[in-house]
Image (tube, rainbow, N blue to C red; front, side, top):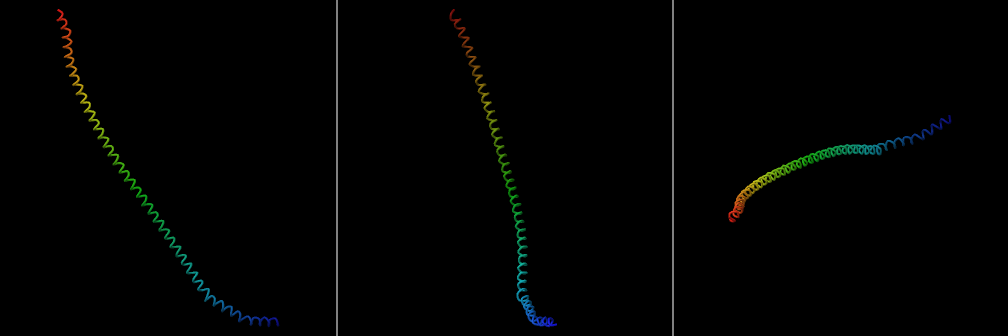
Length: 150
């Protein structure tokens, strides 16, 4: 029994220490851990909010990038269409100028052919006139010595 009596005395001596430990635990829980947990909860909420904001900003940036790419593609298509239109206009003008040059060249060839034909006809007439005159001179030359030697 003496052992039980000693244990009972130790227990009674430990009760105020246990009460102080429990009071210190509740005080720390109320005065230190609760504000610390609140700060940690607020921090976690801010981190989650920032993460959601970052995700929404990243999605918005991707959408803007997609819209930019689409606008760039459309602008390139417009530029290519304008270039093609300008190329067609230049080709049409070039074709028109070539047709005009061909027409002018054809007209000049026809005019040159007509001049040549006129010159050939004039040369033939001149040759015919010369041939007639030469024939008369040859006939006179042949006949005069025959008539003059008699």
